[in-house]
Each structure stands twice: as C-alpha cells, then as structure tokens.
Length: 44
Image 1 (cartoon, rainbow, N blue to C red):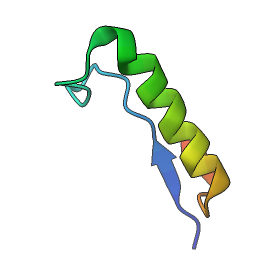
Image 2 (image 1 turned 60 degrees about the vertical axis):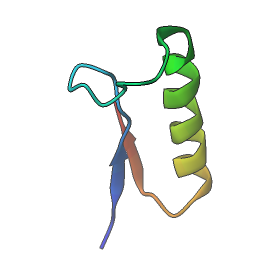
Image 3 (image 1 turned 45 degrees about the horizontal axis):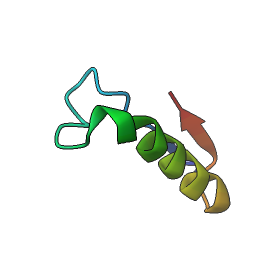
C-alpha cells in the first residue's frame, strides 16, 4: 500500500494560528519532512 501527504495550503483553515509570514516555511518544511520519509507522494 502507498501513502501520500497533502501539504496544507490555508484555504481549509489548516494554517490557522501560523503567522502569514511563516506559512510558506511551514508548508515547505512539511514537504521536506515527508520527502525524507516513507511517503510515496506529496500533494499540494
């Protein structure tokens, strides 16, 4: 079985509480972490 990760983009209010200036770093950090792990795909 393969698993993918959906990187939050904010339109579903999944970045609430994260300063707008830090949102890109948050999304990029999640993608980098997923890429280093066992995830098969990263979705944006």
